[in-house]
Image (cartoon, one colour):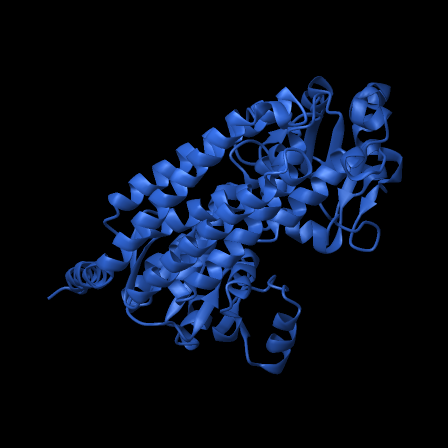
Amino acid sequence: MERGLLVAIAAILVALIGFASIYNSIEGLKEELRNTQEEVKGLREELEKARSTYASEGQVESLSSKLDELGREIADISSKLERAASQEDLEEIVARLADVEARLNQLSKLEEATTGLGERISVLSRELAGIKEDLARLSERILFPVTVTDATGDQIFIPSRPTRIVSLAPSVTETLYYVGALDRIVGVDENSDYPPVIGELVESGNVTVVGGFWNPSIEAILSLEPDLVIGVDAQPHIQVKEVLSGYGIPVVILPQNSIEDVKKSVVMVGLATGNLEEAVDVLSAMNEKLAKVRMMASNITDPLSVALIVWVNPIFVAGGETFQNDIIEYAGGVNVFSNTSGWPMVGVEDLLEAKPDVIILSHGLNVSQFIDYLVSQVGEDALQIPAIKERRVYVIEGMYGDMMSRPSPRVADIVILIQYILYPELYGSTPSEIPTVVSPETVEIPGQ
């Protein structure tokens, strides 16, 4: 019988046996979600009855709106659980619960100081956290074997808990670290340097470098006898997958074009490694930070326009459909090149026409040289770009530069940093206090 057919039969059996064994547990969790939904409704009704006792009508309306939104989200999650028919359904539900939990946490802190209902909301958040953790544990009970649908749409069958993992990208290595699978990595790409212990493991010979991001070595990978290889949605990694599939080695390709892709990748890596519960904790921490940033961004009335330059001479920028575009938008900025896709080349005239309020340069670039280049191309007109005129051109260096270019869980921290650079007033600072070179040595990420 062909291996592909055997994989399909095994996957079907896993699904049937797994869901038969946890049916009763899921039924109990459905009831818990319904109860939580009723509590949100009750809190909403209590707010209406005591409307006159709160600080302002605006605060009441704002909380009412947020509670309505959360109520609808919980109802939709509950409906999704009613129809859950696959491992992927459970993964999606766990991720959505983590997001609602993070939003409730932020809301509870805000409302404690305004309407005084923070503790009630906090209780709801803890209840959802419990349901989320129970679901994560249930999901792990049907591992292994497990089937992961990766960024290419393929279903990757992983027969047992991997013990020898090869990472093809720095972002993958970081994600494996965050979900607690670092001790099973046997191979990495040449740019993987976080956490710092990776360098030590390479030097000691416990981890092998299998080539660069763009040129991984099939021979080096095969020599490590991996039982799982993880890459990202890039052509060299897809080619590795095509070759290794002939050797029966599962290769999971992670999505990388948005912050939502980063979240999905965390769950996929947790599932593929058998560390789903740890992955959910990582996802919750990310959602908590992003919810706080989003709440702060809601206070911005005049968004700044931003250009993120990734290369100079010629100029390449971060356009739409990139996770860097999401970083700018989460922080409350507007990417002036969001109408493009990927990382396109633009002309100096395009930059002049876009008139960004802030320009951010990727690490390795130089602010003075960048401005000199613009002037050499279009003359003094370049100095009239608002970002240059107001001295709001920054280069992201060191570890921050890596974080800005890698779709890993650390993206939540870089969103905070970019928001601080764009809107230092939100953090009790001013633009004049932000240095031209932003690195761990010159700027501390707020709240870290």
